Length: 118
Image (cartoon, rainbow, N blue to C red; front, side, top):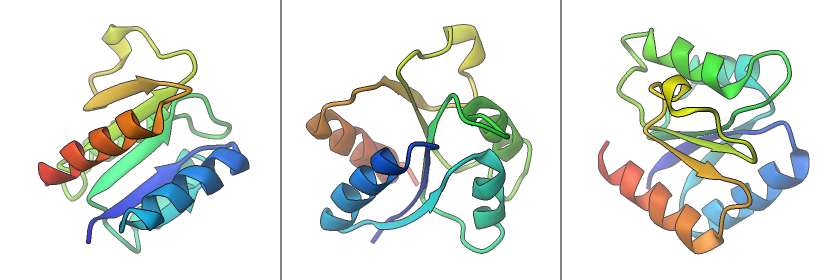
């Protein structure tokens, strides 16, 4: 069973994606911003991180850069999500970025593919 760290500041999206992922057999940990996500990484190293871009305290790009800078976490695939994706030049910390709203089938296929590379 793969584990996923899901990071988004919108509680409804966290709850919905978490429920969908759990129903697909994934173990899910949730955080509402990058700082919470880094705290979660101290206790559990997931197979995949899914993060929103624009969040308070620490956004998804800052989170991803922080993760990539730490040797223990740099290997973890990161899926970015945003209603307004950043320009390509800002995205090298992510493996992929999906534009919200993401169709469930695309989301699950992408998650499955990224988990398979771990």
